[in-house]
Amino acid sequence: MQTLEAIKKRRSVRRFTGAAVPREDLIRMVDAGRQAASGHNKQPWDFMIVTEGALIQEIAAQTSAWLGRAGAIIVLVVDPASRWWMEDGSAAAENILLAATDLGYGTCWFEGGMLAREEQFKAWLGIPQDRRILTFIPVGVPEEWPGDKPKKTLDEVVHWQRWGQKA
Image 1 (tube, rainbow, N blue to C red):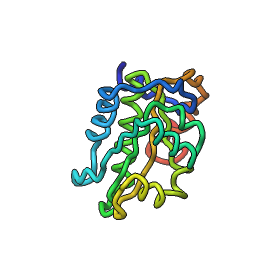
Image 2 (image 1 turned 60 degrees about the vertical axis):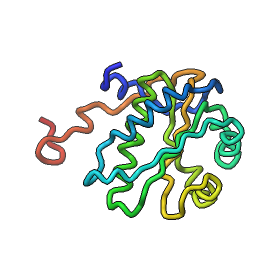
Image 3 (image 1 turned 90 degrees about the vertical axis):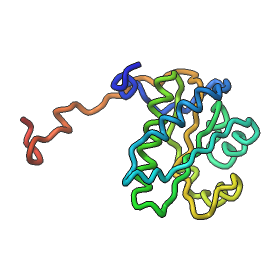
């Protein structure tokens, strides 16, 4: 799959078959995240890959039930001492999401249900207190690929030189 095709195909998937995701594919996704650009090349990230079914079920029980059908959860951990931890971590997450799409897997950037319990998850997963969990990325074989939802047209979102100037 070409990059632009993966960008157009990527959707948030919240319905998985429960099938396992091969270790090699998970490594490829995380390696794509590791390759992201970062401010001053600080690379303020670590990636935790959760594949143990019982652990995935515990995470789902504490957040949202649908995560329990994911074949794996990639936990993106960042170092907030880096000035650009949010931007760098976001770039790494997007690379993971696109790599998963390229490999035929569904994913979803999942933060809302995790954020309120971040300290609990850090303690539970053994993540150092000086780190942040940016997101959980559930990965799995989609039960179905979500349909295309209409996107705004380029004409609606592109401005040339000054706001409102269309051409």
